[in-house]
Length: 193
Image (cartoon, rainbow, N blue to C red; front, top):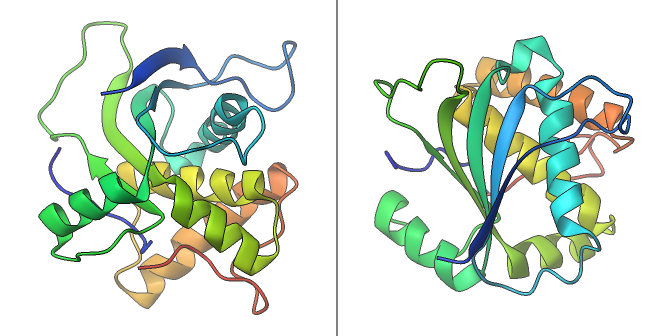
C-alpha cells in the first residue's frame, strides 16, 4: 500500500472475476476482484458480494476507466479499521466511507495475469449512515463508493476542479448504467472527506 487516494470520503477473501450486470450471457469482465470481509456488519446490503462485483464489472466495461486487465482487492471493513488507516496514512483521526491504496507502479504481473492496481477499503457504519442521511438505497451508495475507489486506483483524482469534473462525469455515466441516479446532482452528495 502506498497510501490512500480517497475522495473523502485479515478476514476471509473471495477472489473472483466480477460479472457485468447483464448476467451470464454478458461478456466476461475486464477486472478481477479479491473481495475480503474484514469486519463491520454489512447485513444492511443484501447480497453484498454480488453488489460489489456488479459495480466493479460495470466500471470495467468503460474503456476510459482504464480498468481493463486489472485486479484489485475490495475490503468490506468497519469504521474502526478505516479510522486507523485514515489516521496512519492521511493524518485524519476519523473514519471515512472509502479509502483507496494504489499498488506500487513498478509491480509487474505474471504473463497473462491482470495488473494489480491496489486496494479499496470501505467502512460499514459510515456507508450505512450516509445512505440513510441521503435517503438512498445502501446498495446504490456502496456501488458508488466501489466505483469511486476503483477509479482512484486507475489514476483518477479530484484535487483540481478539472480533475473532479472529469472523474465525477465518468462516475455518473457508470452509475447510470447501473440504474443509479447522479450522486453529484445538487440534491445529492458524493463521497466525503
